[in-house]
Length: 52
Image (tube, rainbow, N blue to C red; front, top):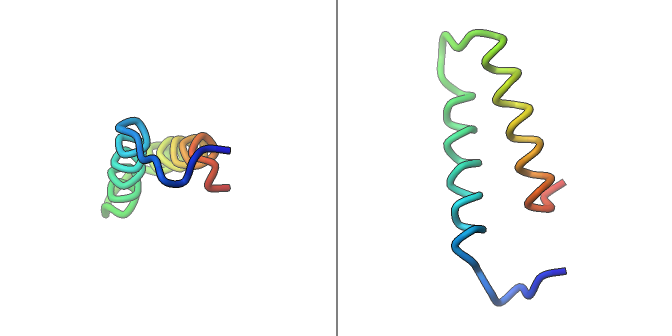
């Protein structure tokens, strides 16, 4: 378990990637194949960040 008082550049980077993926996922006219790819990336990143 990581120290809750420390916030690293990598953690910030992961949060920004997650945010951008979620924003992309909410775009209209997004092909289903791309939606699935983005959802997979989100799940992987959330797992890495221990959000799940």
